[in-house]
Length: 486
Image (cartoon, rainbow, N blue to C red; front, side, top):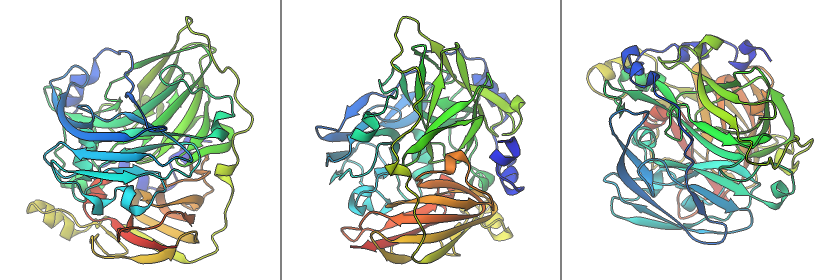
């Protein structure tokens, strides 16, 4: 796979990567020389056998040795614990809001009833709480959770109201894979940050940041710059979550050796795939295996942020994570499995209703005028800005539909709640390896053809949403709603 194929054909993605509104190189220098440190994984919160309690909290976090930044998190000052779930259980969840802004808690990737999904219609006021149950019926996968209040999603996810989910099942447990958390199995939550002259992470988007997406100076892993993960000299499993507001990350190994892709958004593939590099868009998740049998490896990220240069050539890549062999520990897994559970990757046919969604960020004079006078740009799907009381369509649970997503002005990561899909075509080409299998988010450049499985039911009168996962675009109205019937 060559780089041109990986970065998606056409000029619109390159235009996205070249957008203005980036932080200055001088601010990037604040974090450029900071030392690496051992990785800090989010604590585990086991929901397999007991209740889950998540409380939104405000705090302060030091990033890369700079001045303390104002942040938010769940059960801690930044980000949240990794929640363990198991297929076949129905864990009760208590969400409490200890911050001074409304929140929701969206379970990104879980196909649960809309009342538990945590979309924009389930706001929790400051000082209040919400109780839900999560019926877990889907295969093992890496998911995540985050706040989803319309108009506030971007700043509050940027501040840290997000966390990882590891969903387990018997099929995945029957395969020889690394799965000891913090030893050979690592959750990596990626967010890029923009820093002021004192090293504080700031979120102050201008009109171009909203139009094209907010870009940072550096990419952090679990809030750290270039951490080191020590692991046995064998296979290491990386669960990567792109929790940035808008930036995609082009990932590769510094050694040039291949990455082994084993999973995407909705679960494991039917077989491992060796790739030279992989593109991870906002909202997407991937699972990778890296072999430390030959020594240390460095996971690289190329992005358009000002400290790392344009996403593209190797000169623009920066170290994201160092994987260092720890010879004091015996490797649990040293060989790559030949097959993975096939139930998560069974092909479907788009036999039902055909729908077309045009994502429009309104790159015209009216949006520029709105920005100049202090207003917010208007973003739409099918020429309609999001309205919480409008339902765009209704469809039966279990429907298999054909959706065309059009993003002709720039690339957009498209995400749907309450459903999953398989990518049939994207930008006129066959799916890349990371676009195969079951997905819930895909970076669309041009037009994407999706075979969509509607899996969850609406309840309590609450719809599901579909939207662009450039969170600035979502907040500006690039979102729609649908309901399902049993």
